[in-house]
Length: 549
Image 1 (cartoon, rainbow, N blue to C red):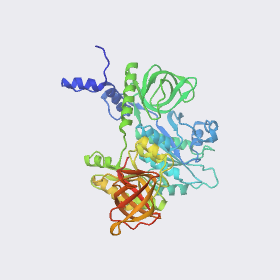
Image 2: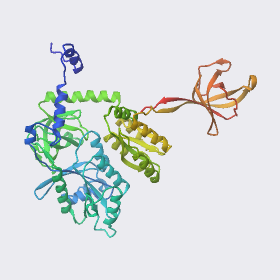
Image 3: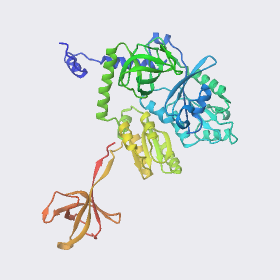
Image 4: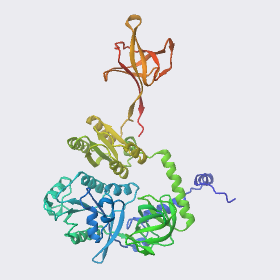
């Protein structure tokens, strides 16, 4: 009596009596998350309680194109002055008033943070401002920002900054934008572009007016008369006050005393501070605030939900902790083979790819070849294409959009493999364009075979050659790396070139048959149907292994 049992045991007991069960905390969590999307689904009472909320705006763009300076000009504050070297060091959330209406700005250090939050399943941004310097034009990071904003499917407003400089050329910027399929309104498109100067304040009011117009078209609404839900924008450990979390409330009203859960962290709200540093009692939808009260640090992008009581909050956090540990042990990598299964089952209709190639010419050639691959079952969607090695930014974008990274004649930046493994992203490298296209085409048809990787087991150098019966020659070798097992597949290398691929017929250590010889040992190797050895040849033992994604 009164002994605590876990959900799995409880489900087994109830199943024996023919009763189907659902975990209460998961049901409560699902309901909270579903209702947090403003105006999406919900009962009639929720729909009737909907009210307009401020738009949430993210500023993206190339480094040193004036993202933080533009936000300073909007807020009439000097954030950059307080930050090292004038570069944004963390995510901040701020709210401004314009003609009686509020606009919330997320000051992100580039699109990596923007996509990092999205990779955790949180939809935060309503509008993306793309800042492009009028004297500099579109740069590589600008292109990445465009691709990240498109992948998030948020409307883009272009701010052509630094109009006060002598070399400002807004027409060149508009021309470059059109090359990236962003056609501004002046040129007959639907993308709003505003020439601004963060230094002089020129065009700032026009930019804010256009943001409110886009927000009005989007019909952004939320119900303030329900328990709050939102997203953690950033979290830090204060030496005196403990874990502090900056949250953006998306639905409902958050009050002091509420029990909250964010990811695997939970707590009771002890204090709320707004973006101006004032202590407040509650936060309405669309507003940012800093919370004190979490027991542990939540992660940026965690969905925050208000729970009925402490017991429910703690139980949900513990359940998520168990689910997270189980997920990590099983791995969640989305591989091309997994995509094939999902296409076969009809679960997905698009294959999302992030493409990297050695030079820009290759990027365009490969991109055009891949985009022509459209089948009845699915089509290819390239989220981002660029030249150079695969970077951490590519991993973040792929993770956020359930995409696979394909590289053509490129490598990985330092530490990328570890990040990809942690985030469950598959990176496929190709040296021949036709292999890449064939793999993608087969994936779209649902017929892709598992990929195999060649693994080097060991290498032996030929030191002497012994003649045997009927012109058969035996290689007297010393193992210089790894091990040579009996019966292994062997590659004969001479000055780096492959002469023959065959198998070991006999392996001896002195006069005795050996199962394997290891590094530093001498041995005699007889190969199947190959005897044209020369002293200095390398015999490389290898095997085919299914790739670990």
